[in-house]
Amino acid sequence: MKDIDAIAVLQDPVRRRLYEYVVAQGREVGRNEAAEAVGVARTLAAHHLDRLTGAGLLESGSRRLSGRSGPGAGRPAKVYTRAPGERSVSLPGRDYRTAAELLAEAAEQAGLDVGLSAAARRRGEALRGSDEPCAGLEEAMAMLAARGYEPHLEAAGREGEGVGEDASSVIRMRNCPFHAVAERFPPLVCGMNLALIEGLIGADGPVRARMDARPGECCVVVEASKNNQD
Image 1 (cartoon, rainbow, N blue to C red):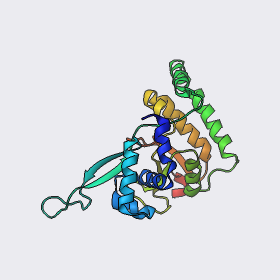
Image 2: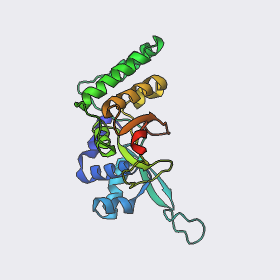
Image 3: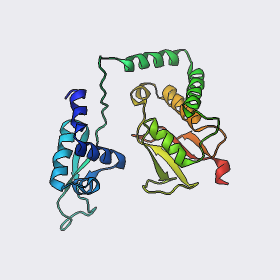
Image 4: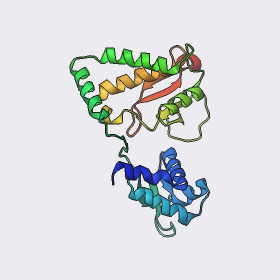
């Protein structure tokens, strides 16, 4: 399916809410949970979730939601997660990805990683639009969300949702806006990304950014600075 056709599938408001809910969870979501979250009947949710899967926007599988196995564990249920592929539409057609990859290749070959990081940090500072650093994790979350990082709070050292903002929480990001280029040039692009986020949240404030790569997520996390943890 062409990208424009796949994106058109999201025009239906219920379908779009279901897609956004599944994406926001960062895990497998069953039909009952998705239907309840969006406020529609299970059969309607199932129809739309399968349409999203057919369009390549979601992936589906099956597992026992009870977590048990063997007799009495119940039948496997259909579950959904976001598909890994990217979708984009440009009218008329543009090819910024090729340009980005060529520039990254040239920068890597010329050893321009230090200069690239410096430029990225300046861009982050300009995007922040203030001389003051982020006041805390909540403000950092808002800034990162506006840039498409899909941030969420997680307790340091373990996976979890619904963690309150405190010194032991970190902001992890489910999306890397530079994923396609980062896959080909990870040291260069991940270093650029770290510098950009450092500029965005500000230096010497209550939060800091650091590298902590994890499969399927952004390579950077944001946490309370060491001074703020004392």
